[in-house]
Length: 365
Image (cartoon, rainbow, N blue to C red):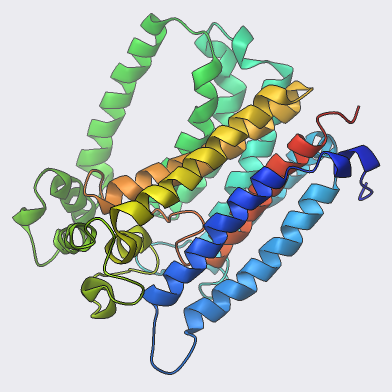
């Protein structure tokens, strides 16, 4: 299972690897600035490097196993990840208002669960291709599979990650052929659900964060503080930025959670519009390349796997950047490869391993 065909090595996707390496490198440099101290390398950078090492090993193992074996392993992997996710409700302490972490703050099972969800959805859509789906009832199985991790994450009281998991699964909806009239009914039900969520499920601080999208100045010293400081950091970067470790918002610690949720604010302040566009350009090229991999895949499971990986990277990046710019509520979604977090980095590298796996085996059948 771990042997690699010679033709797969000959078709190794160096472009994909290069784009990923560039993003990881930029993320580490950004983290060094965000956590800079006068006594050497910060603990966050050291732990991120350890996570990078673990992620690199997981990446290589994922690449070495022919991706077609993952179709058979999808359900067992999904079941195990759901058990791990459910264990947080019993074993995890309440941290920052949610029960999302095991082993202190080292393991976040919801990140692993999202990769497992990609596997089972790719398996489901391989058997019922999205292009052949014309009725909502045909989405019952994928919806049920998605509902399990989303419900468990909601029980953890981590609504940001629950939304991210739901959006990752929704990536496949772009390929179905269900009439718009059916989607209109879904939209009405969704609005009713959101209204119910607003009235009965959201905590006061969560409602405040949503209202702050409209007017951050309504509570500038509390719920609106993060967004205001983030906008100041982004704006102060100008065209070329203030320079590495020269951002006042970053180095004077005016910017809260600058090494996690607001890592992009650090990038924008110190590297300016040019640096921000460079990072976003790398993201765009990686995601577009992922779609090319999906199109060139020689089987539907590989194509669906590639589409899921693209969605798992696109949605957190889009939500995080919108959050940093004040266009979305602050819901704790990390920016892939930039935000500090071992579980997020390892799961992103595993997802990239799946994508590279599909790419390099497109001629091996």
